[in-house]
Image (cartoon, rainbow, N blue to C red; front, side, top):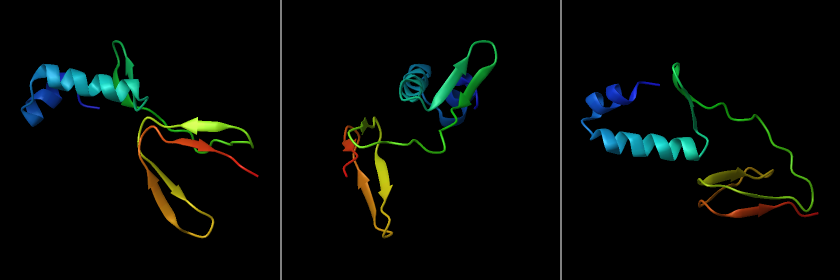
Length: 84
């Protein structure tokens, strides 16, 4: 990813705004900051298996594609549960 300074220069944002945006992305697990190496887009797992009784909650919107092809989008904070 571009450096904090490069993002500031490219978009004309205050450095504090860039820092806050990067902090949000980091808190959501979307970027990895490696001191002395830079900031990188985090790799998302290919698939997460859930079992009956498991639940999952997302901090970002989630799109679900059903077996029948229907697509549904749910807001951040939605809790998902596996049922039989």
